[in-house]
Length: 139
Image (cartoon, rainbow, N blue to C red):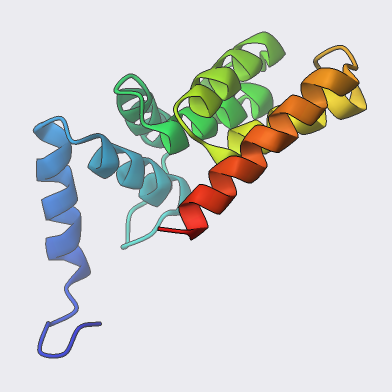
C-alpha cells in the first residue's frame, strides 16, 4: 500500500469494471483472475471469469490467452475439455509473448502429451521461452 493511499478494494473493483467496460484488456484479464479466485469479496463465478478471459484474449492479451488455453484443457467455466483448443490458445499466447505458453508448448512436445513428441520443436520452444524470460528480466 502506498503511503497516504487508503486501501479500498471496492473502489478498486469498480475502477476495474469501468476500465473493462471501456475495453481495457488488462482490466478484463484481472477481472477474470478475481472472479476465478473470488478475490475482493466477489463470489466465485467460473463463467464470469471465463467471460473476462475471453474478452481480454480476443484483444491479444497473452496472459488471458494462456489462461483461456488452460480453461479449455481443464473444462473450466462450463467449457468442454478440448486439447486442440488448448493448443490453439497456447500458440496464440506464445506468439504474443507469453513465456508460460512457450514453456508449456516445449513441455507438450518434449513429453509427447497432446502434441506428438518432437525434440526439435521442444527445443525451439524452450529457446523462445528462455529468450522471453531474459528479455523480461532485463527490463
